[in-house]
Image (cartoon, rainbow over all chains, first blue to last red; front, side, top):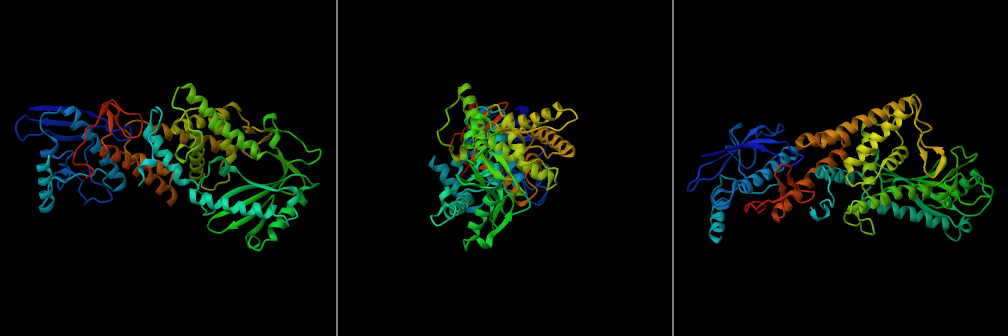
Amino acid sequence: MLVARGNLVPSPITRQYRIRIEYREGKGNRPEVYVEEPKLSRRPQKPDEPIPHTYNHDTPGEERPCAFYPSMDWDGTRPIATTVIPWLMSWLLDYEIWHATGQWYGGGVHPTMKGASKKWLKKRAAKK
Amino acid sequence: MDVSAARPLRFQSAHPDLDFLLGRVAEDIQLSPTRYQKAVEHYEAVGGWLAAPDSQLAVFRPRVFAQGSMALETTVSPWGRVEYDVDLVCEVTGGQWTAQTLYDAVYTRLHDNGKFAPLLTPSEPCARLEYRGDFHLDIIPAVRDLADMPRPWVAEYAATGVLVPAPDLKEWSPSNPEGFIKWFKSRAVSVRRDWLLNAKLEPLPEQTEAEDKAPLAVAVQLLKRARDVAFNGKETAPLSVVLTTLAGQHYAGGESVTDIMEAVLHGIRGNIRAVGGGIIRVLNPTNLAENFADSMTKAGQDALDRFAKNVGAKLVELREPGIGITHLKKEMEQLFGEDPVGVAAVDSAVRKLAELHKGRRDSGTLTYSPSVGLSVVGAPGTHHAPRNTNYGD
């Protein structure tokens, strides 16, 4: 199991984050990203609103960024440093902008989806 | 939102994102292009009326043109008021005028127009036209060629020197609004161009595009706005002409609005230290006998020094990597916000940055450098950020 910790600078105007990436090679596995410090938090203006595009979004303190869609974007052949890292940079920039404006500019698909969205994604995956 | 209008910067800045945000705030606090156009229409109408063949002034070929912030491109939304101040000059050539007779001639002619009369009030030495909810047009009469008039101007600007009535209309004051505009443009445009050529950067376009405004002008807008917020109408506030002249004097080239503001504020503090217990003089670059700061008090100078120190320190804090967008936004609101115009301007600036990030990512042109982060605005980073196929759909 690979565990990598480091200081991530998403952008000169964002905060800097200590992050942890855990990756166990194997079919179906993908890197898991943890933001250790500063911890991800909800907007103080809306404490009931979960952080967008996170795993465990209903458990404050346990949220992890969803910076890529596992079955589509990760195939185990690309280096983490040049994929997950820049995706996480963008995610953290979008996260801070969401904190400042209340709007999520990152687009993306939420990890827990139902019905029509899942069908649509399956269709897209089949097209690739 | 038209992301293409928010072009990335063409030069190396140490803090391109902050420069971008400051530029966008300045765009939102200035006279909008629509209202600018409206102001031009108004003063062209005034000029047309004053010069019309049946006007008593016609033989003196009156010429109406904008001076002040509109001409310098340094307009800012008026503090605590809705109406922008538009400063105009009505310049005549020829005639045996006194300050009183010239003022009366211009005022009377304006009053003779049924549309202008209800808007007109005396605001010596100007005639003021009040367009409720929009503008105050302040028209100062001027004469170019009175016999034996004093000519105190620096040679380079002497050709455009005029006399305007003093506020009591009992005597003349030398003035040179076109000279000042020429001076400021020489600082904003020529110094800028020379610096860019020296730094071997991309040459400037011939015309100033809306999004390629001289960074000195942007810096002056933001300094004026920061002054409005910090002084909130107090009479110790430094005059706009003082700030503008000091900014022009301390600008030595460069494209970063952050750096220019810091250099100007640092320069102002240096000027104040240099006079010891006295009061700084801010000489009109076109007329070294005129001190724009002649009404500055010790209290006003102390307040200016504190202002320069505080805003300068704030900018240093904002350009430090790691500040965080929420904190940055709050600080920018404290600097430029406080009223609905400012709060909206800062919010919009952050959103424009967000849109630029999204646009770059969606088009696959986002880059980053590992220890610096994403290159949303500035020169491209060392690495290409691979497309995350989900995003933007």
